[in-house]
Image 1 (cartoon, rainbow, N blue to C red):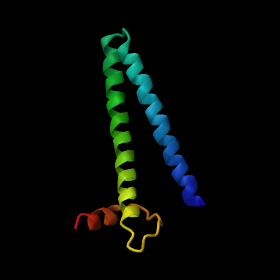
Image 2 (cartoon, rainbow, N blue to C red):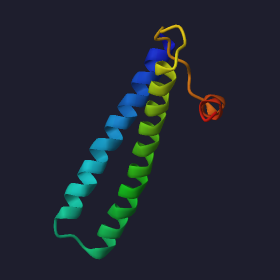
Image 3 (cartoon, helix red, strand yellow):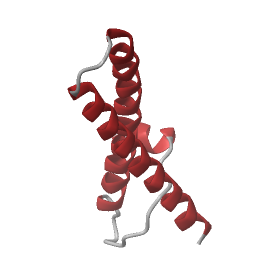
Length: 88
């Protein structure tokens, strides 16, 4: 149950970051001063990188789930060890 709470927190972080990125893009579409545009662009790039990381971890977790030898669907925590062994 503790892991479920942790997963929910990660999902909320993803959703919050995605909404903020959407707001940044919306504001960049309007008429704004150059300084504000540069600041928003920088924040947008940070959010984009963060969201990409969330998605990579999710993709790796799906791979781990798909590779269960006995057909079970037990999730493993993703860590660097799992990444290294999946590249064999």
